[in-house]
Every structure is written in C-alpha cells, then in structure tokens.
Length: 199
Image 1: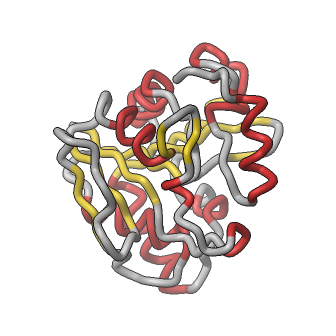
Image 2: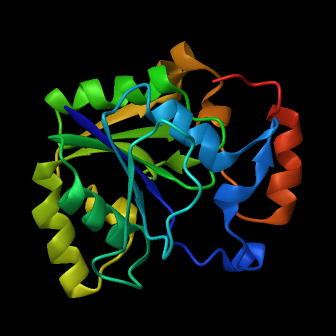
Image 3: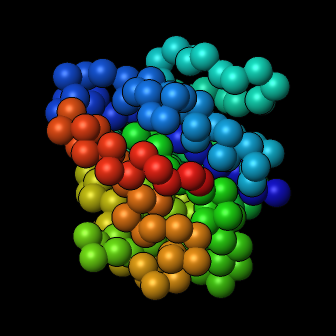
C-alpha cells in the first residue's frame, strides 16, 4: 500500500498568506488537481498542516492532519506525513505544484524498493517536496527536528537516496513542469507558459 500527502502548512508569506492550493490553474484549483492525481496512485491520502478541512472532491477519502511539531516547515510536514501514513512508502508534494503527474509519482514510489528517499533533480537542484520517502526516514527526520536542523536537502545526507535526474523524468513529461511550483504572484503568472501541460 502506498500513501500520499500534500504539504499545506506553509505560511505563503511571499503570496500574502493566501492558500495556494485554492489557486485556479486550467479551470481547477491546484488542490483539486493534486487530489485527482494522488487518488490514481494511493489509497491513503493526507493533507498535512491545514487548520481546517478544505473542500474535498466528492468520492475521495482524504484525511486532514495538523502538524505534529508546528512551525518546523516542510521537514515538520514530512515528519507528520511519515507518522500518519498507513503505507510503507509515501509520496509528498507541496501544495502549490499544479502539474504533478500520476505516472511520475508512481515511478518515484516504485523506486523506494531500492532507497529510503527518491528525489527528482533538475538543473535547479533537488526537489525534496516532490519526492517519495519510506519509514526508514522517520528517525533521521525526528533527530533533525529535535536539533532544529530543518533544511530538507540536508536530510538526504542521512538516508539512502535514489536521485531521479531530468533525463529520466522526461519519460513522464517536461521536467520543469512536473516540479513547477508557485511561490509568488509573479511565478503564478509565469505558469501561463506551462498551461498546455496535461498530467
């Protein structure tokens, strides 16, 4: 069994505190798009870090859970996801990634048989917020949280990592689109160049 989680606990300070999952891309909110994708690959779906349960598309069984250790950013969200997941492996995505694709995420999950963490990498670096993790990561994550060492990419020093390079990602679509996210209103406007992408 695989699990999947949307990390939604960020403050979105560069986006005026707005819920980025509610932004509309190609006629649907990013959250609805993500849930539609995740429901194709996982029976256990979490939304981590939202104080209230958002509107969930009808027919989807989704659990909304609060961060177990608040204020610790994405690493805290990963800690909660690993703690709450029912599957042996979990794929996590940030709440502002509109073009994630089910075959690509399933590929990441399938590679957890050979590694503790499976992380895409493009010319922009590692993408640990669109990656798959196993329960073997739980203890290293907890140690880093306890020490206040919260940088997600540093976690990769503590676990067995399988990197998925851009060349491998191209089998599933444009690598830049697959991991595109929205940090600022300007980046949201820039998504128009990718709007033709269909996950």
